Length: 500
Image (cartoon, rainbow, N blue to C red; front, side, top):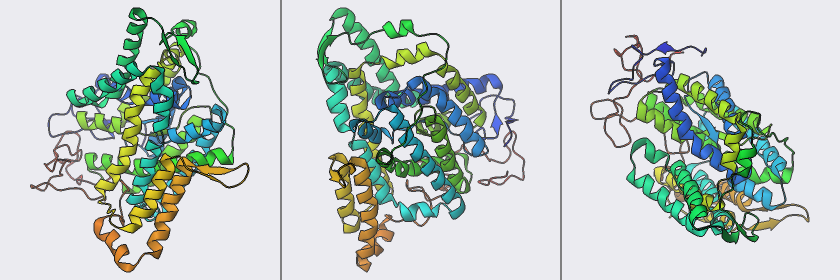
């Protein structure tokens, strides 16, 4: 798709029951406004996760904009989405640093994973999306996502939380309250609101209660301010972020490769979600989208940036606004690139207190882990079946432990890497050895899907009682972007088809 969009009607916000298609746009002022919402939606996680991984958040935000533009070009504008920082690599990065790796080792290992992800995308594009479920059925994918999240518990408990336990507790409570008490878009950015709250609370406590004596990021007990603005004052207003050249190691690469499993599932699920909202068959584009995500990760990490992935937060913005225009994503990407060129902004992010991160990470890490349980639930995975129960139980405990397998004097597998191998290989071996009735039970109860994604979407649109598309609550979804008769839609345009 060229960088041009049809104007939707008179360019105003679509009325109830109508939506703006990916190849359409509102007036440019309104498009800029929608793009600004996308920036806010992706912003919190896109700079929180680089902080947790020890990478430059300013560079991460700038490269997320570049990666988003690459993604939109590769998918030819068919999948409106924003590529923010991926949380799937956090556990592997923590393991790399625990084994003596630095930021060069981190971005080098993630770059290798990005190449693998891009190759998987090419395989899916040419072989079909069904290959994903043959290799990575929902039972296995859920286990890998779960162990990635829960493997991070010691980081939150041992590094961030002790730096200021009361600020951590207050921040955690604030995030929980916001996610429940607020509605709509504000509830979706509860993590960002929690970070701002913890930031301001730390400033207030420094003024009123004075310094704190507690462990710092290295574990050494020191007396210090909770937050120090000296680096912000020294930073320039405009300039390039700090770049880091990648270095490569087989050992470190193996620690982050399991994240590819989670990213394949995540990307496929997000494309399915967009397909259901836009009422278009995007199955043929899933491989291209996964390839584009891999390319985005490779480009971002080649200069020291963070890994990328499609963001559910931005899909939520589309659902709320019924504006699926890719023009808004180009606006958001350009804004992110400009923010990355403001070092003072990056310095302001880098001084977020450890206690604040403690309160946020106990929520975030748990949410990542519970996404695995969500995959199991949506696909009706049966843990009364030993094929699912035994190998996945072993893999999860190995990942959470973390359990280490010393292979040679200089090489070992542990935690996420070893747990993922046990879950994936163990499940397929168990299925091969199992009696016929256990194999048949997998098909009956949804643990093995023949088509669709690993996140529970089979690729079929749900129909409401009147023949319209059903939403997640079972009611009819009126937001079809292909509804005949609405502004800008030809009368011969079929519902649910992709005419490009």
